[in-house]
Image (tube, rainbow, N blue to C red; front, side):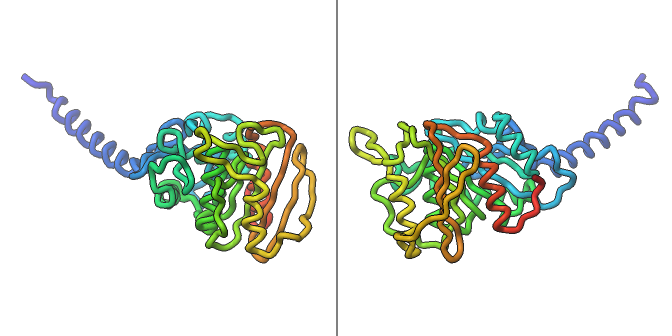
Amino acid sequence: MPSKISRPLACASLIASLFSSTAALAEGKASCGEEMPCEIESGQYYIHLPETRQDDGPLGAILYLHGHRGKALNAIRNKGFQRIADELGVAFVAVQGVNGTWSFPTAPRSLRNESEFFDEVLDDLASRFNVDKDRTMLSGFSSGGFMTWYLACEDSGRFSGYAPIAGAFWEPLPENCPTENPYLFHVHGTSDTVVPLAGRWLGGGQWKQGDVFESFDVWRRQNGLTDAKPQKLTDGNLECERWTPEGGLFELCLHDGGHSVQANWIKRAWRELGSIKGWNEKS
C-alpha cells in the first residue's frame, strides 16, 4: 500500500521541478561565461564579467581577438586580462576565430563574413549581458590586430575605439577607408620579427604583411595629415606619436620588445578612450 505522504511529496517535487525548469529557461540565454563559451549563429565568444559589478546596469566591454591559430579560451584564462576588466569595471570578451584564423579582406582564406559575425557578437552581448554598444573597444594581437585594423577601416562606428597590437593592413593596402575616423591606439615592438614594422612576405611570396607606417599613412593621407607633425608622448615603456584630425585619433606607440602583448597596453587604451569620450568607468 503506498505511503500517505508519497503523493504530496510527488506533487511538491513536480512543482519544484516546474519552477526549476522555468528559472533555467529564464537564465538560459545568459548561461555562459568565463570558460563556458557563448554560442551564436556564426561562432562563439567567452566573457569575464567584472567582480566589481554591483547590478545589471549597462556595462562597457573590451573585445579581444587572439593571434593566428590562437584560442579565445586561453585569453579568457589570462589573469592579466581578467584583472584589467575588474579594475576598469568592464566586461572582457575573448572572441574565437574560425579554426584560429580571421577572415580579413586580404587574408589567405575567407572562412566567415566577419562583419556580420561581429554585429552578431555585439547584439548578443547587449541582450545577454546588457553591454552598452556605445562603450566598447576592440583590441587584437597579431592576426587579431590585422582584423582590428580592417574592422576600423570598414566601419569605425561599430566599436567606440580600436587598440590593435602588432598587426596592421596587408598588401595591397587599401587606398582609403570609407568611414569616419576611428579612435585608434596601436602598439608595436621595434624588435618584432613575426610581424615586423616593415611587414614581411608569407607563403613563399604569396602574401605580404603591410608596413605599419604605410598603414597609418592611409588614414593620414585622407585627412591631409601627411606632413603634419605628431604630438609626442611617453607612457611607461611606450614612445608614442599621436595625430588628431577633426574627429577621431591615430596613435602609434612603440616599445623596444618583440612580438608580445601586455594587458596594461589595452588598459591604457581604454582609459585614453574613456577620457576622450567622457566615460566614468571605475579606475
